[in-house]
Length: 267
Length: 93
Ligand SMILES: Nc1ncnc2c1ncn2[C@@H]1O[C@H](COP(=O)(O)OP(=O)(O)OP(=O)(O)O)[C@@H](O)[C@H]1O
Ligand SMILES: [Mg+2]
Image (cartoon, rainbow over all chains, first blue to last red; front, side, top):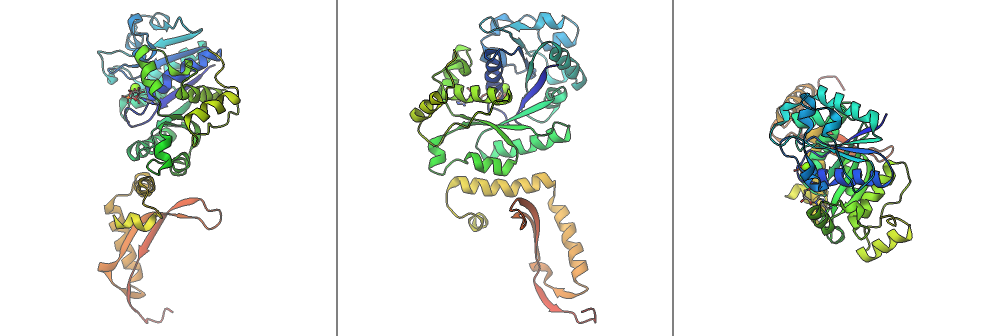
């Protein structure tokens, strides 16, 4: 049985889809069979972030409605081994699916894949309930801003209330320069406030935008510091003890440090 | 806001953010409404009034966060500031 991981945040636009795409591709680079599930019905984006938008025939709602079989809706990413996407429907809304149906769907996928990664929509309504329904592990994404952290805290409470204990935190878009001058909460501040386990820290990195433009997740780019952060996150999920990158130093030093530790060699 | 200056040592915007977050989350987490605090307040007044005369208008009650003595972990705390006007000598002391 594979693991079903939901990527969630509460607040919109903090990097759930980016994180789903990068962690998922990262798993595939590590040789794990992986399927990405876009649970953001009506606002699908994972397909474009992955560069697979032209290959969509069927979607998640088609599967649930019995229009097609699950296998038929899965899009194989030909660039990587064993990486698939189950796209969201674009013309339906969140109520087109129930938590029960999502649970059946993800457990079906978990029979065949090592990892099922669910990209959760923003909010705490039906879409959120659907996305977490079949998950056995949750990753909460936040940015170092008051509103994002507040929403993350709310989400952590809701996850725990729904039996998803010990969610892990990804801090996204950290800006070292702002942290240095005391204008952005640092990692310790956020861990102190949210009191959950830190899975990783992804710096604000323009490579993310460039790679999204191309439809190639940054995790595949050895020159991207955010890509490095995602490679580390993947390794930590797989149980490796990867030290946190030294984000207090400048970026040149950071990537040197990363190379010193031997990460990011694989392409 | 003066309240936040009181709590934070520096003028860094991140320290202000952190203190504001801590306070707002205590309320979010505890799901405590102002009405609820009012309820607690009036009951406290009821209990204490048996023993002393208090300045009801000056009574302040709020949820905040404090470090536990034993291990320094931070926990929510209910802080009440109750100005006493006069002790009542009704033989209970
Ligand atoms: N580490 C980063 N550095 C720079 N830009 C980033 C980073 N992470 C995310 N972004 C950008 O932020 C925007 C929002 O990211 P993304 O779509 O992943 O968020 P989301 O949480 O999935 O949003 P929604 O709630 O709308 O689904 C995108 O334009 C993305 O390119
Ligand atoms: Mg998204």
